[in-house]
Length: 106
Image (cartoon, rainbow, N blue to C red; front, side, top):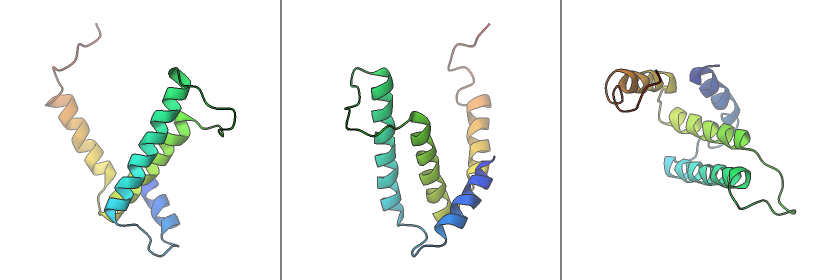
């Protein structure tokens, strides 16, 4: 599935609501909230802070999907193609900015 497919699916779902998309600053706040929840899940799985018995189960995978949903909302409401931007970013990383930045496997 491409970002374009994800963006279309998100748009079809949010279009049933008024407003379809929240203002961008509210979407950013939502994204930050979801990233915090991802951090919490990572801390529970790999860190010393384990979940309380009263806390509902969650997962890193679930939080990554939530973050992707919010990113699609932000892109859609700003008329941004994540596929196009992904390609630009990967070209930059592979052939310009990060071409010699990291040690490569032999």
